Length: 313
Image (tube, rainbow, N blue to C red; front, top):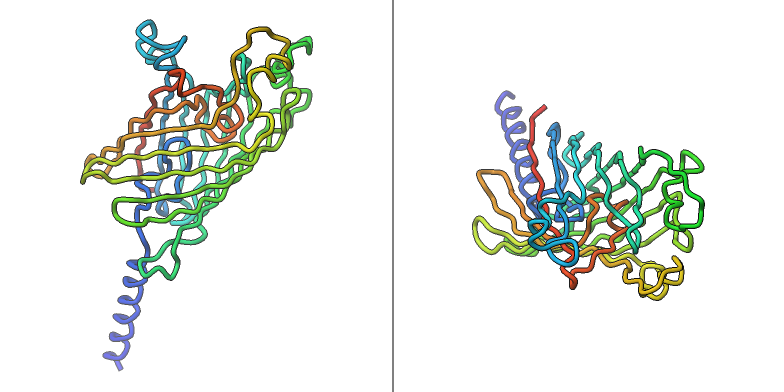
């Protein structure tokens, strides 16, 4: 009888190990790509303290030698933490300066508190019985900025007037579908929806978007990551003439652009260090998806990095 019990325990232990090994690990090395979330979640009872930095334009009118290629300017900074409730559930809380703006330079939301919930619903297996990983992300943002006094003549300034407390809020929801095709190549797509309770004249409260991200391993230590997020918005597809007419300006140059990023990952003793370049100024989805107005072709991209430290709780 004891032998049967011992055999049963060993059998269940072997099944558990086999089941755990059926999953594909590290579709991406981190829970962020550059601007986008990845399909990855924190392990259970892990605390991740993160500090992210975005500097100023490297080139263009606001970059170059005079600003040490943007390093003397800070576009956005974010500090906060995420916690793994289970291996598939993350919660997070972040504070960000906020950096998004309208064409012409008027500011979007500032002084942002961001709550995040992330859930991995499906996970890719090695036998392809589940060919992809599916993760959901929800973000809620509230602005703590001081209420502005505006005459109402400047349309973009209405974003910080906050007639009601709810006007300080913005939300983002997305599904991330990713697959690790090999040890050297991973790909994901992320359809999303961003809603802002208060927007400027002629803008849209709700914006659908589609993102794509990839990771390419080029050596044992180095990897290349890239992502792009494209908002589906009639306003964001307009040219400079539309905004010149909207804001009543002459010789106006400015519009919205997709958020594009590329970076180099370096694995160092269990930690991943990343240096990236992107035209997005904001660090959270509720900021960079609606408000990216920097143009890669004009040198309006910036260097960024993230410091991340994991703790066992």
